[in-house]
Amino acid sequence: MSLNKCLVSSPATVANLGCGFDIMGLAIQEPLDRIGVKLNSNREIRISEITGPEGHKLSFSPRENLMIHVLQCFTKKLGTKQGLDITLEKHVPLSSGMGSSAASSGGVLVAANALFDNPFNNDDLVTLAMEGEKFISGAWHADNVAPCIMGGLVVIPNYEPLSLVSCPFPEDLIVVVVHPHFELPTKEARAALPKEIPLGLAVKQWGHVAAYVSSFFLQDKNGLARYMEDFVIEPARAALIPGFYDVKNAALENGAIGCSIAGGGPSVFAFTFDQDQAETIASQMALAFKKHQIECDRFYSPINPNGCHLID
Image (tube, rainbow, N blue to C red; front, side):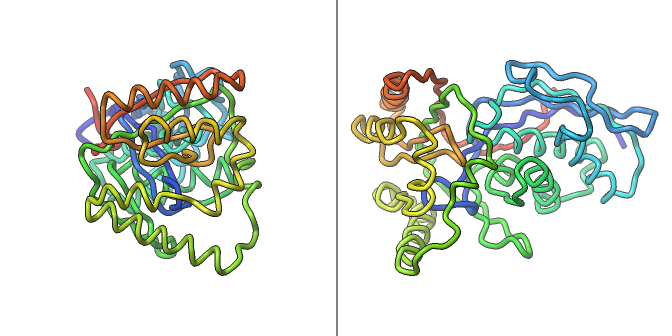
């Protein structure tokens, strides 16, 4: 090992992206977590410091903090008993639909991997990070952790074995995310999903997914607007987000090409190709939430192409 400490910037993410439940996600420019991993001499994996506006909500306990869990998986796979200290500056809001758990697990794994001279590739790291998602929500999914680690837009066509496809995207695409100030745990969001889907509805959804992914590859802006619509997950979860359809309508009426729930919610995202328009869309979405007595944070940026990366 050439280093004894690594510090990583780890981004928030938006998963599902409309019709792509559990198989699509992208990284955004902000908010970002800062995660450090440092060698220690006592063979213990522990958290030494948690700061940031969301840090007070997190536990230092190995039984409750997913960063310790995924590093235990990491060192076991590596075959080492090296002790590690973790520091976290937490900015990605918890239970927000913005990939907070993915930012923690992805960031700590990328930092540890760099510390040990990069023994694992992206597929390995995403697989390990999914252990963190299962630890938190009981579901083994990659639509947040993959773009968090890899950056950009990622499609996951298969889980067994894991298959990851980095997808091209229009460089001028702006992602607007409005985060309402209440938490919606992933377990609760998943519990709202239907257990079965009528075949005709499933076929309609599959058609949109295929055309939607194709639209990203072809840089087809009209296709992105036309095929984002989700017929299965969004209707099931909309009731969990007060004022969701008012917020969605506010986005569309102010020029967004599409709008849906970010991950499991309660955050809501929209797409636009106009930087000035992005601010208006974000403001009007937040105003729609405010009419339901809910305050919001607003973010808008191009897609983050870098994902987790080392910083000085």
